[in-house]
Image 1 (cartoon, rainbow, N blue to C red):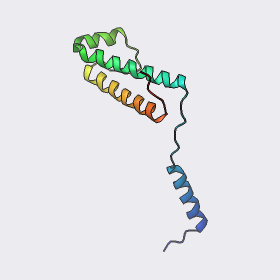
Image 2 (image 1 turned 120 degrees about the horizontal axis):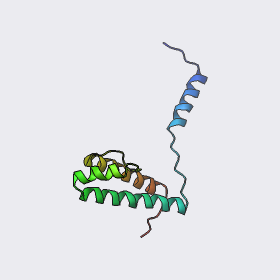
Image 3 (image 1 turned 90 degrees about the horizontal axis):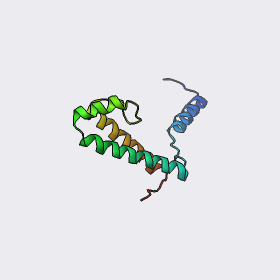
Image 4 (image 1 turned 30 degrees about the horizontal axis):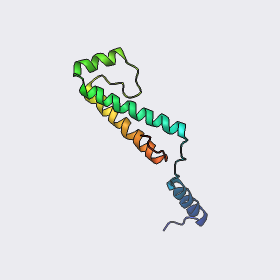
Length: 103
């Protein structure tokens, strides 16, 4: 069979186990939490606005305002998909960072 030195086996195990360890995210300060919450509200408003629009108007809106953090797409379904993904990502970051929702 194969003979692997004990040192190499121990080192490899330590590297593998060390890479698997997950560290908890550091809690955000109130300013960062407020910024996250503001982005979530903006994304929510974007989803509501786009959902209520006619697809032709959505295309016109994106031509008039091409720069947005939410999406670069011009078709309504893809815009909504990107916005919902962003919302989910922001909510996850908000919840895991120890932020409290402000009413």
